[in-house]
Length: 112
Image 1 (spheres, rainbow, N blue to C red):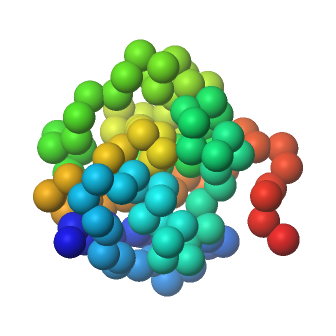
Image 2: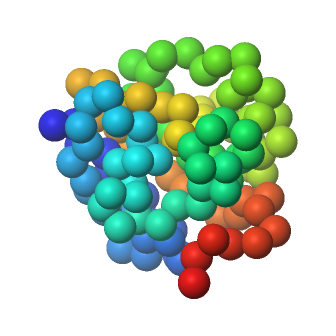
């Protein structure tokens, strides 16, 4: 298993978390499987930016972003050099540390 450390986020993950993720899953799937309710308005299809994350450690070990992901990231709030869409990051063997941005551009939350 790969460890994903999630930095504290005031609403989604106030205390931060360390979760086990299965290689081959996406980061978004791993977060959702571990009750970290990251937005994912397009159902993990790389058609929005609501699952945008900042990869603080392990970025260099990830596969490069596709052109479609790069195009979507251009619309993300708080874009940085380490920005990725969590629905497009396939978990490998290297541990990751991620930060959830303070905001998304999602107008309506899927959360209750």
